[in-house]
Length: 241
Image (tube, rainbow, N blue to C red; front, side):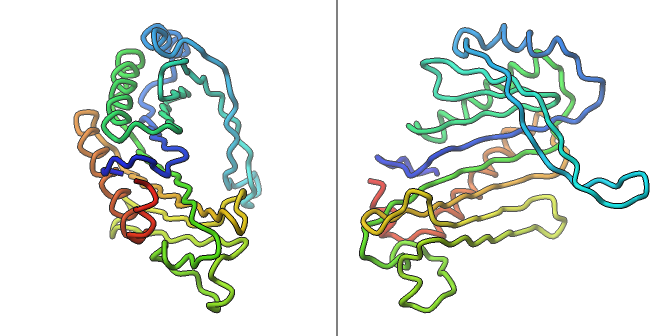
């Protein structure tokens, strides 16, 4: 979000960089990276990232395969961002309180600079920028007054649905860039304080030279900001000031 709100609805934002694997992974990289970030991100712990992919077996039948990636998480008492490091992977997360895009962008660039000095990557294979927002609106109202993307249901049902989820995915003509907008009810919603989630993910699935990264990142954020403003009404934005 380019506009600096007094009370931004952001729950979490993350930037994930998957680097092109040109050489075998050097297991000394986490230690070198930690030496550069420890002044601000002195706390580290190992976490497991579980993913599921569809892969062919020996008989060429497609079956789900569970993959567990080991990541190292770096955090600090005063650092507003959490960093995660894996094999050819760098992730920067920020949660409330959100200091704004300029601060987050600066932290991402700093982390990438430390990673380049530690791992000497050649290029970025995939860039993902994601913003998860929670919008709380007054009870006994109509969600259409705050959300431009309407829920397909009869009016008397759709005012404050107890549970819903809707997803829109926009692709460019070469399927290199896409934006996924997911809207759904928040778990802690009730009639008195109704909340819904606005989850916007921008993905760039092409090789990016490191010298062009900043330009691509700024473009990614501009697209997320555009979708955020299109999805919400003026009534919703007034809640954030």
